[in-house]
Each structure stands twice: as C-alpha cells, then as structure tokens.
Picture 1 (cartoon, rainbow, N blue to C red):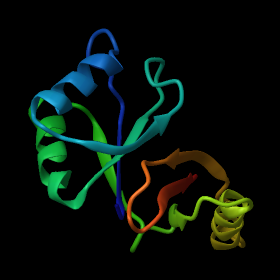
Picture 2: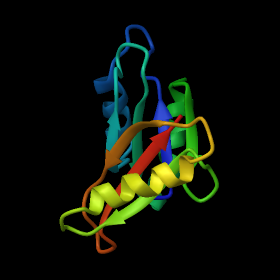
Picture 3: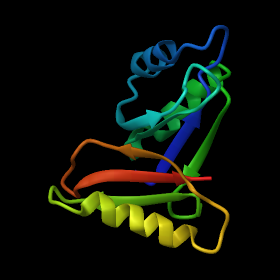
Picture 4: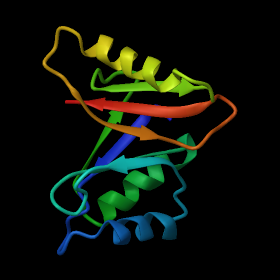
Length: 128
C-alpha cells in the first residue's frame, strides 16, 4: 500500500460513483479511500493492493480520468503509517507527517484510513 492514486472523477458531469463502478467492474479492490469535494473539482484518493495497482491505473487511463500516482517510499508529500488498534496511534501518524513536512511549506491536506490487515491499519497522510 505504498502507492496512493489520486483522480479527479470529472468527466461530464463529475461522477465518483461511475469511477468506482469502472474500478469494480475491472476487479480492482480498494483498500483505502478518501478525498474531499470529489464531484466539485477535488480529488478522490484511493489505495489498492500491490496486485491491483497496474489494473487501477489502466482503468483510469482507458476512461481518460486525469490522475496522478504518489509513492510513500519516494514522495515527501505522502506519509504511510501502519496503526495498531490502540489509543494515540493516529496522533503518532499525524506527528510523523508533520515532522516530515517541517521546514517545507506543506500542510496536511487529507487522510486515508484503510482496512485492517496483518500489518495493521494502513493510513496515508497527504500533504500539499
């Protein structure tokens, strides 16, 4: 879950349900999703398992959705945390993102919280 895919679901008219349907029809399983103002010019952000990344990007490209892909391993704007189900975990993740942003003009823009796995609960913090 190192990648986060961000797309503006604006075809004509904007329709995030249609985007989700196209991903589902292609068998793409989302493991985290979020965003803001997704049908009003914002971005729908989501993560998929490693085995679904290429298919998700293929769907977006095929249907001409503007999108970008961020990698938490190489993009300072994206922080990935694996939380345990206990108090303070999300706060620690936010503190990690804020520390990563220190000295830059980046501020936290949105947070994706995914489904629990054996590694923990994945959280991606995106900063702009």
